Length: 433
Ligand code: XLS
Ligand code: NI
Ligand code: NI
Image (cartoon, rainbow, N blue to C red):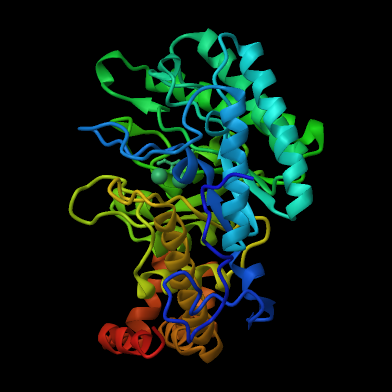
């Protein structure tokens, strides 16, 4: 037991409470589209933002004062104690972590590995005692200076080797803890300048690396999903996993499109010049929608600010895409969200998650209501109805430019444009959000 969250009670669903430390919309047992809300949303706490982030920004260092900051195994365990206390206060069913979030870095790879294994056992006991699950594990291959020029895409084969050993250790840890997914986010798999970069080699290295990860997953019998998290830039000037569409073509090239899915983050979609729902719809179209990192970007600064979500209409459109595919299977809603650096108190950490979970619950309920009403799908089907006629189908299946041209002349085809009805659809959405 730590005393970090002393005086903060478990957060309950109580719409009448005046407190910002109770849920007004997130009711885990409420049924939404045939499933408990908790099982639809599958919330997870991001260990790094809540317990490892010190409040720094590019112009200033630590603002938070946490009793577990430091580099010893004892402090790593104290951090784990506080983390599991917070999962229990929030009633969050899952968490996610990188190796670097949870264990001190050793002087050698072997020492780092044994630190990780010790913490994994510690987590294992706590997970068993509390029923908390692991949504996904991952390797941090972007903070340490060894990774400054990339991990799998590094010009130095020894870094590739170090990265392979690192991912093996994190996949082993995730497997041992019953993780539902394993994530690869390649923050430094990209370049700072093309002047020193061999794009062709780096793409080959990345492809081969991912094939090894997939092979190893099958070898150890890991049943979870391997997920890639796209992002266009930051910290690299250009990141290879730019967006969903880019990653899909990479998966096709390396024969991995049936093996790997996407972990899509709101802020990364915005950095790529897309909306969140665009990235989700794209992944769903390719059959590779896996999981989401829920947060929000600052729309002015152009940084990946990882704020807690607070925009219900936007979140509703995101869950609409997810529910339309039938909802999450191994995936879930990971709060890749952190406090602002002036939010110093333990209560801020709880309130950030409570508000975000309520926003997601509202978004989910609105999305379910829209799907059940069917208005959007009906409007979309009407818009494309011509393609379901015999003539429409035949043209796509058997048409040539000559045969089509002949038909245009014979039938005197002279199309009248029809309204796209965007404003009416926007008004429709506003009835639900
Ligand atoms: C950073 C990413 C990172 C991944 C996990 O921008 O969002 O937090 O989710 O490595
Ligand atoms: Ni991010
Ligand atoms: Ni993320």
